[in-house]
Amino acid sequence: MESTTQWRKSTYSGPTGGDCVEVADGCPAGAVPVRDSKRPDGPVVTVGAGAWRAFVDGLR
Image (cartoon, rainbow, N blue to C red; front, side, top):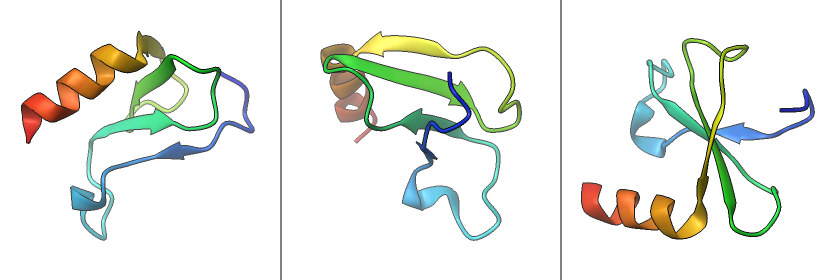
């Protein structure tokens, strides 16, 4: 991903940030890039928006 990509974590991460999953906003419709916050320069997995939505809904 480009260095200008804006990544975000869950608001449940707490003030210290923690080790969590980050997602990027503003990508082409239907794509959700996901990465590990411990390794920001590591691999990025891109999943479909529907699959991501189902995953998040399953966590709730």
